[in-house]
Image (cartoon, rainbow, N blue to C red; front, side):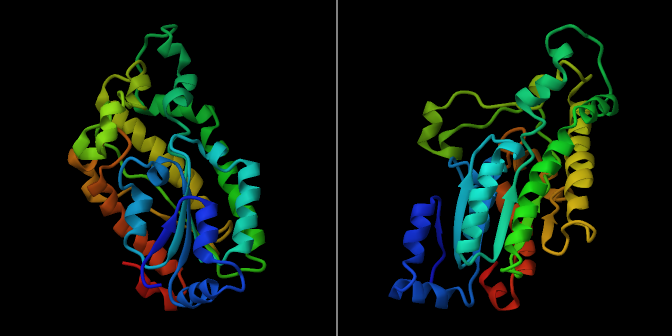
Length: 303
């Protein structure tokens, strides 16, 4: 075994690992002495099949073994539901993973969830326009961020228990880049996503479709998105969870909020998803975090 092996089902994972007493398992165990084993678990930034997303861009730069699971469009609460966490915890106990990579929370305040918060504006009961700060205060009252935090805590508490027997297991999540293409639909072209583009309808936008009823203009929407993604998700959920007082002994966050390349419109495929090239840029940052979290004798397998 001398190349990266990655799969998208547990059946394929078991086949790749081999049975406990098999020659294949012995080869895998030998390989994993110097190469990482990684679980990627998340929403569309990880799990969309349409093009090379963050997880796929990360995986292709690693010599090791990986499995990629999740659901595009899912909220953190759905991805990290109690039944899902219980199942994944069992698999983490069984298989020799070095790292769990998480990607969730970006959908929790978009589309229909955002529409529910600003229902009065969308349905026309209110026609006044708000500032980004005023809109963000209303969003805070919806308790979206405590809900995201609770979902992550569910995962981290479960992994904390797994670490009683596997103390070297680590967890990595990420924040989001500051969006620039407010109101942009997905560029579903054959060049971007292949022939499936011929079968797809319009996708997005997920933020401006709602906030155009609430905010003065797209500049205000960008300011609102910054508050949502940085002040809300990163600073009030992810960074506190990664603090020494919480789960910082094994949980880290790759921060994309200040990635300079993301300020170019060409970085984005649509309102909230980078292009393949954009994800490649983010993967460099993400893999730097992966490398730092792995045992020293496995770091050379990550670029």
